[in-house]
Length: 479
Image 1 (cartoon, helix red, strand yellow):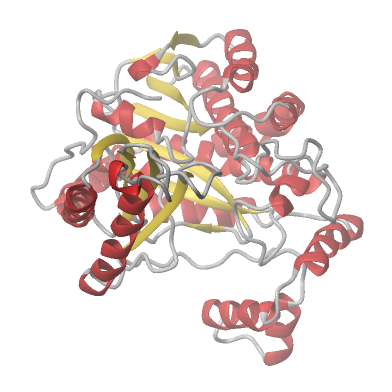
Image 2: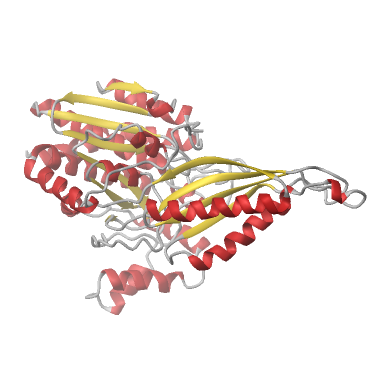
């Protein structure tokens, strides 16, 4: 039996413990850095498997590095386990039904993402032990990928600097190795403080913080005309001044995200947003406090590692689903489809598979789940992309990741539909496929010096002399 087949057999043999861990994390959804219960299944499996675990990384209580082996090369795999607020949903229900109204839910599939990485690490470690392979294997437990960007704090502390390569995955509605860039982002809370007064009897004695926030928003609206097309600016009111209309509002708070293809572009736009906020405070005679939240860099796909991962996807083959599983995914899609969804899916299929007939394209588009792997396509244009702190890892070491297509086709991340699918047998099969893909590609890097050499050369070409510099101020800690 060759080593790759052995790795796949190990994943199959141990899949029950990875699936059980995934389901436990789904059952205890926690957000940002407060992931105490979500991290426990990792510790249990890793300790049993013989990894040494260092906890409390980069100021995050529930971040960890699990290590096995020693010496070079040093291979890293990243795991995530945080959930999203207000996405609680009953598992296996194709209609909206929160388990806890307003509660959190695994709306981005991180319960599967993280345990996929766990499965890959355990499988590769087992083979390394059996074959006495040299090298160091690390599994990084990374809280707060959603908005808090735990990996960005880890990268700021140099946690990834000595890696020869890094690997990860993400749930998606189609399987592919990710060759597209992501958007860098900076985010902060802008808090205005004014002076309360009676809005009718003594308005001249008040200083309205809500006026300042609204003026800031108006200023940013005008700014939108003068930023690059790929940039995005989002906001949410966290404090709209209170419930009384006849009080001059003494407080207001807005949470702003600024995104662009590169961190230097984000920083330029963010600085202009800060100046607008300062101007709004001056115009209203209020005070401004800026609470910087976090930031993450754009993702740089490493071509040699990505191509190795794409070849391993072909070796593993697509998900094998039963008629009942296919029907379940279609049922979720039918209960949630927006107008034009099938046309959109058909356009994606036609672009991916230009040689297929109209009938074949229609069949793909009308399926509840995309089984055929999409081709690896490189693009520096992150249009339509979000942000991920995997980007920070990719600035520190050659990095690649696979999107595992076990979510209902056409359903968006950060949705209750993904939560409903998160404990399904389809999700479990996606976990196994992803674990095999990461483990096989990490094995390639571990055993093939030429691949690592090509990956490092591509990494240096992509950076073109640039180095990773975190834009998170040194005084900002994970919070």
